Amino acid sequence: MHRMYVAAFLFLSACGGSDDPGPTGANSGGAAGTGSGGSSSGGAAGSATGGSSSGGTAGSATGGSAGANTGGTAGTASGGAAGSGTGGGGGSGNCAGFPDASSTGIAGVGLKESDLKASPVANGTWTIKQPGVYSDFIHLGRIVVSADDVTLKRCVVRAAANTPLITNSGKNLVVEDCTIEGTGKTLGSDICAAAMGYSNYVARRVDASGCADGFKLGSDVTIEDSFIHSLLKAEGTGGPGSGTHNDGFQLNNNANATGTILISGNRTDLVHCTSNRQFQLGGNMQNLIIEKNCFSGLHGILNVGGSISGKAELKNNVLAGSPSSGPFTEKPGLYTGAVGPIVRSGNVFESGEPVDTDTRDASYACVP
Image (cartoon, rainbow, N blue to C red; front, side, top):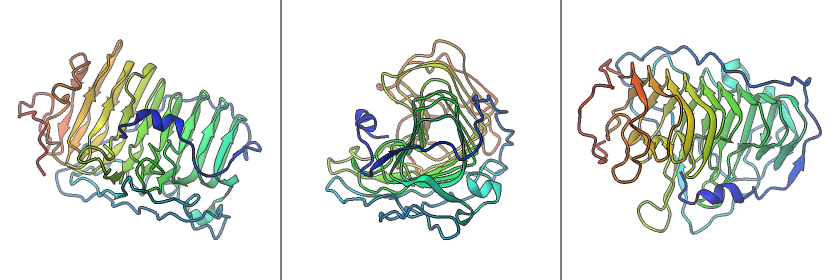
């Protein structure tokens, strides 16, 4: 996560922006479904290496036409003294049976980039102002959704931008079977804040990589059956702690999330000891349900800095890769808010050992 949260809201892509010319498919009015939450079985003990990030070098975007699209990066990324980063490798835990690169994104529906057409705008910032279904496209840049009832299906979104690559201000956004990849390398300039943000969206079978965080959370968010991996690790010039603090899921400080945040059936494969937490929840929430996921890597699982006023459940998750600061614990002296009210049940380590009754030391030291 970036220390400068406000910057994630204020900076825009360096690429030129364009409004959308309308949906490429039929209008669906597609209200966000609740989804099934994905059925996931706990992985059998064993070792599995996490995928490494392709990183994607900065270059000029061609907008990628069908057939010969190479998925180049959006715009030209300028270097800077702020530091640069590389995509992180995965955690060492075993999440067999959970989503991976073969079951999410366009690969999960048997498509290649050459099967897709360029988006109506091709590259730069694409602002979608009309409801409907937009499918089977590559977009080299940011997507800003301002209309209600928009569905993005079978797509590739690839860019260098210091905001989420898909940002939603409408209602009932659904993103399915899409590959979302950040390509920026320069801290404070073009490293994407997350694959998607912030409120009123459903992400289903999404392959998310290359950003500082996986997903930014807000009001009424459902993320299911998705694969979050290879988040970008970049060191700043201000000494330790000045670079990216990678989180799988993040709710910004001082945010007030209404409705329900549902995280179900996902897999995170993140760097152990060089990142932050699976969940960094700095704001206030109404309902939080985290179920049937496999979490691999990072210092630990959960930081909560705000309050939870309604239902809060962590259930039937698998913890892989030995999170070193203890299961479901807050960082001492910093995030001490709503950990207590969260009901925990059925959570296990990849060995099958119960998590919820674990009494091991919960210090913040990271042990590789």
